[in-house]
Image (tube, rainbow, N blue to C red; front, side, top):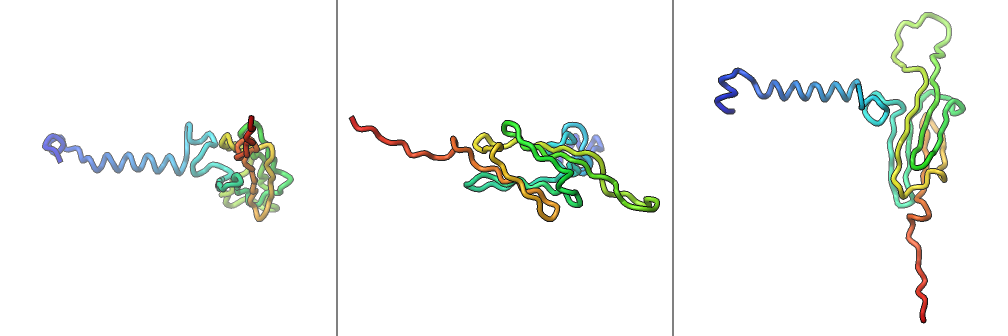
Length: 148
């Protein structure tokens, strides 16, 4: 530790812990750019993307939602899932409310070699799985050699 830091009474480790706390709180409760639905904890619905040679699978977790209340759309290289989760708790006064309700919309930008217009979606156990194949243009093609 340098003499100037010791003399000034500033603990460099305290400042480092402040920065760490600020980063952790931005992950826990995103605000600003982080809250725009691009990524981070608190973003709904949470998503996992798996890639293989045939394309990718985009999995959105939407537990407790009726598949009829969910919309899946593709435009250009973007897949968008939207819908609404209603409160629907039944009779009685709500004592505690930890489940988020209301409208949601989440868009995922896909790589250029995929064909979102050919995607297929399946809903099972609260998870929407969207299989997006590799586009025909991105697949290797055999080129015939012409002999003169």
